[in-house]
Length: 397
Image 1 (cartoon, rainbow, N blue to C red):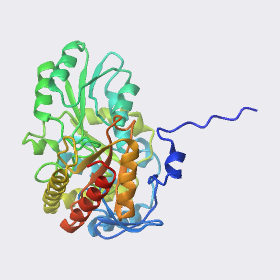
Image 2: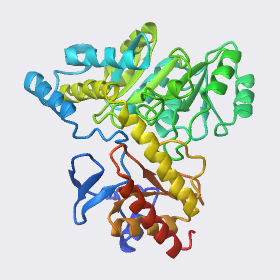
Image 3: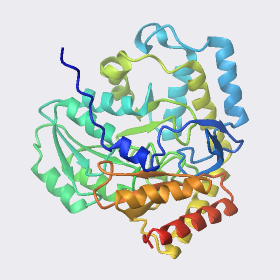
Image 4: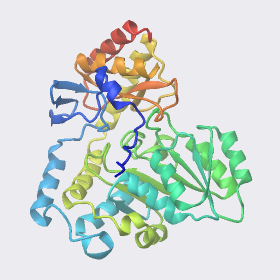
């Protein structure tokens, strides 16, 4: 009898564990009110600098209360998928709320952000079409493009000249779609929306933007990349985002024209064949959108604190690439340097994680450090002090 081969992961996990350099899949057993601190198994309380909860809304009383009330009324699950017996009033309210927040006619909610991307892209394109992606687009976008069967080409990151070349070569008689991230999750920089929109207009291409890391982060009120650039809500044709970052819940969404959304609800396989978002999660997302509207000071606080964090790191000599929003890629160079700096931070009470190839290019292993609205200046100063001390000891600085 032949034993099945165990698939190898991207890293030699056992090596990192043996070297004491593995800090993944750790148990966060408690989130301290405010979510800037967490309690980690075997580590105790730590400052959280690896969170997607950019606005610090985890544990917000209004959001928790909405989720609890939803459980009391609808229970913990649904009766099936949305298209059949799984839709409750909260799902429709959530879609109406996100459409209003993003300034579109309609929206569709998916069980996850990953599902939103792969389902939407594969539903809107076929093998005769061309999809053009930024080189640093999220993996879920790449998977959706592959699943669609469309001809997929990529352009150099934020390189408008290269994008123009790609659009020029695409079949003008078939659908052309450009897909970018609003804020790039590993580099923290922002898509050149004005330039990309202009090229899409010139070549008659649709524009889809993944706003997973820009909703709640960009713009004076946190509505995203259009607000950041002072552009109208009609700028982006297909707006994708998640309910699991600035919004402390689970799920994903796509917002756009009513015609497109109706089509997705009857064609997108991830919507048709995936379980509905649990009522408590839908209610939490609705409440979170309202909190973002009611408490715009959170968005300002996040933006100010990130600018302070970024400035301190740059002054210390760190390479942060072209980071502009919420995410600071602290470039270390080698995998060994990144993992050792990570463990130096962990040993000093800072929760931050190393990102290694193939997730990022070889030679650009980094710590992915994030700031939230609830961090204090003292928290940030301490984190910079720990990072700087460790980087100097390891020869990174």
